[in-house]
Image (cartoon, rainbow, N blue to C red):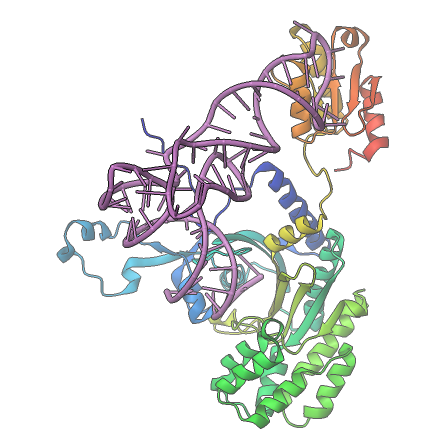
Length: 463
RNA sequence: GUGGGCGUAGCUCAACUGGCAGAGCUCCGGAUUGUGGUUCCGGUGGUUGGGGGUUCAAGUCCCCUCGCUCACCCCA
């Protein structure tokens, strides 16, 4: 009898319990923060109509959409006799696809349910998305995204709120060396106008300047030369991108240099001035963010402020990214509704937290193991465990009576911090021998004594 | 999609110009019949990713294939 070789589709993962506790720790922190700012949960189906997803992610993105083969439309005939079934159109093969991100489904939801929703609509969404990409380190074909968005207001306060939630979440999780980078698509577009760079060249220019961190100033200059810009254009563009300093002075300098040359650039500057002012009022420290004129953020749907949070150690790229997209919903509705938001790269956040050792030792696992001493003390053990559970502790009981050595090994492997043993002596007195696995210390106590001990020890019962 | 590197025990890796497939860790058991981690002793564990070829002989050489990985592209 042959066994089936167990394996996973490439770019997918199992999350074993130990990892799940870590994931939940992060997701619960994130969720709790979102709800404190008034964002409400939303879920959408894993599959969408292909027509909903098509044309939103650029040419590259289009190829990365996981398409779902059409079901029961005669495709099986292809297997039997090609002549019976002729494919004239891609739509005959594929009509649905797996969700590629959370923003486009949100836009669809807004367009479909606009009369049932109260605007501005503030939602968060934590669900997996799929990309038919070739996997690499930190890059998967199935991964979770975690988005907050505000739909229905052009206010820069909404952009600032998203950015400050990023700051709050990352700080709460224990990150210290991260920085929010801000830019604005209007500013970038305006800058290209001011440099008299044609719209047809915008995409390649943006791709080039976005690589600044990776290939450096010279690398960017070479790419720009390759895209047939004049040396004057390159000089003006790169000179401007190099402007650094605190947000206010960068924005003032941009106004001085270009304010009379392009109205769109000026609008972009004003948006950022208002956004950064709001961020300060929301309590984001001034040294936690900066204007980074190289920041481009993909090629998709952004129309206003854009932002990214980066961490330098380890140098793994961005942890979050987002911005304003005032036109996307219009693609489903026929009229534009302003929107902005941000996505948390939850997979990377978890990776980096592991590397930086930011997880608490014990998260949500069992706190107390009650051993199985012998059949006659089972009732006493179970009722002892029950008392501890009533007090809010996470308690498990060992199922089989066997050597205590084995049961203690079990607790050790599962990182259970306390073990309670009830033998005939303890049972007759209504107490347990209660061992602290970390210190090796052991006391004899009744259920209340145990609870009290644990509160002293690690402030348990709160989670 | 383009171009490199690598596939040997659960994990990390050895095995000379082709010559008996091994070690450490893990795991299981014992030393220790009411107590984990340290130590000591013993044990389990393999179609050398898969298929074909060359050879007296292939983990090693050749071909195909699958998988993983790195860089590019793009992205979270």
